[in-house]
Length: 548
Picture 1: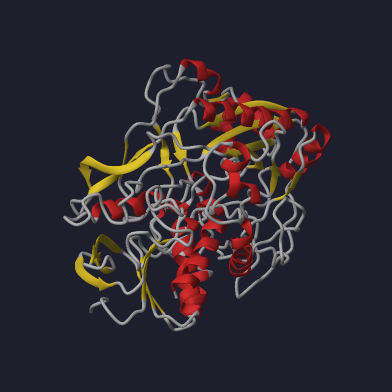
Picture 2: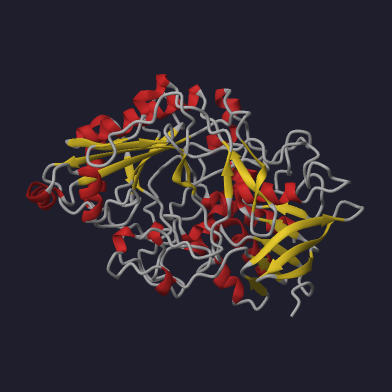
């Protein structure tokens, strides 16, 4: 059976960008083919959060759900940044030697290949970028301005919120809204309530975090049961991953075809620059797919990899790369986390992950980073993590400490803006090849002194609210020690100048009139700590409407 014809558009990838593109195109009457490199997941089977051993399970990694990667230059551990070293009272009071290469963590670049992409794994924070993000360079001299404004995306933000089902209270956050959130807010958990109270006493304004988790039944999906396992996979379907939202709704139109385990190996351009076909391996079988309109939505690592793999005599640097910008301007997530035990607090392991947020907690660095309540994302929702990481001692003393202190941990996370260093990029690795014999993507990502200074501000703000809450610090970790990124950006950035950007402001590549990009590789900057999924969706909806 061939998959090569009969469609109006092809979408490569099914995550935040690919799912939204497919939905929009189907709504506009086009027949859409989605090619997903990974497998389809079965939530009840693959996310067994009600069975023994749940606490030790992370997000599953079935065969074919992770791309092979290699890491290049990740910088070195400068002795002047030793104060930012990770530590844990109960687990790892060791230090990597100063001057050593910064390694990737065990997670490294945390991504998922599968039907739904990394939205299967994401917590579901649903943030609009602040209007100032779009003109960051004009306001601060740092980073780059975007070639569009907040107003250009506002209606698409609302559309995405309606499809995935975002719950929040609509409190002012500097991001104007033309429509309310579709769902009421979730109740704050014990840890979040402690941070709200402590923050108010020191000038940090904590508020409900917009979350793509249903606070009540919505669009044939059940309400959240507050199991706390969002990043381990949602077995109920209340989390707004694209498999149960955009793709499910697009399938109901009868105009969507989805092929999992379909690995695109190469794109080919015709003499007029249009992409005429994609070469695909479907469950070991070679296929050729026609591409009337092609959307590349594989993420900020695999999107540039495929463009570079598609080099030819006519495009020796790869497709869409006359500017030599494909793979450049890579931005990782700048992150910090501080954890403390609050005497007398009970039940911090309960509730919704990432339920509270604090925007602009540092007046000296406005818009540079945000804080959020991250106890459950830090894995502190069970006793094993307490015993391994937070509590010292052995035997009877450890058991007694666990009985007394379980449910008292509060973790504050911080995510901040990062301006890419010229050494930070995605390239094709010269040595490592995947199972198909193709060069894998190599990630290089170097933290600058400015990034380390921002990490210190993030640490200071996180420690301040924990101290005010009466917490005793027991664990801290951040980007200084290891490359660990759930969000990456910038490797096919948009712009108006074809010599310095890969696509136009809608995501259409400058070099190929029918090739569009709709994922975080478009981002000219990382934003001020906002999670990117909602912006990816909004950009994708806008691009698909323009392409159709």
